[in-house]
Length: 264
Image 1 (tube, one colour):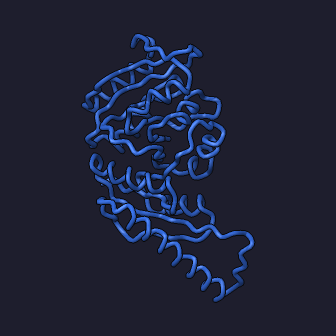
Image 2 (cartoon, one colour):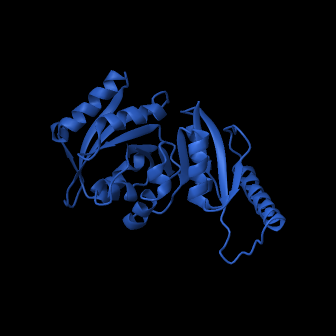
Image 3 (cartoon, one colour):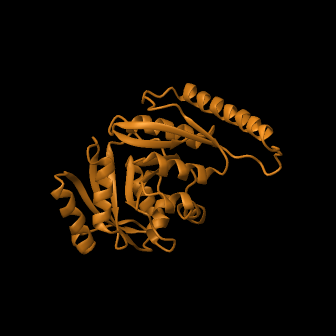
């Protein structure tokens, strides 16, 4: 089972992430753990000693009630591997601490804001995303597709893409496509011959075959990030490596309506 940590809050992104993980569990057996972080306002005065401990206990209890409300509302069928963990402090720091100490194989959180590359890259460049070693699943949509896309480009290391993605999805019930992205400012999305993907595409294909994975389709798409992001919406998950700020692939991911599995 894949040891998975899901961040939960009382909001729509967390609601969709919970339901998506419940769906994902039908394809990949998960050992699901939940985490919630209560971030105190700077104006909160907590005192010292037993006063601070009592305050933190109260905040933790409030966070636990929040998580329980979410679980009752969503009523997921995927069993939890343990009691939800509730912390008080800075969100990303607490999550990163738990990921490191818990030896998780996957981190999941909801993210519904699309078409804002600057804000999207700010998330990707945060310490949580750049310092954790496990793959990160950004849930952007509640899809019922049974297909995953391995998103390739000149900037994607084929071996890293295949090795890390198969650690998460290799034993899943998903079908796999390879989508090779090439930037173009054409008015319409264009589909090119497979040879246009070059050596990176060929290596990716060969590595998947070595792992005895069936590839349903291989596509070379040429277009703007908006066009390619729209094209990817048919997939349950789009898998790729963590992009750089100036990469057009980063803009594709920002515009994608499909959930994204980021590898590093």
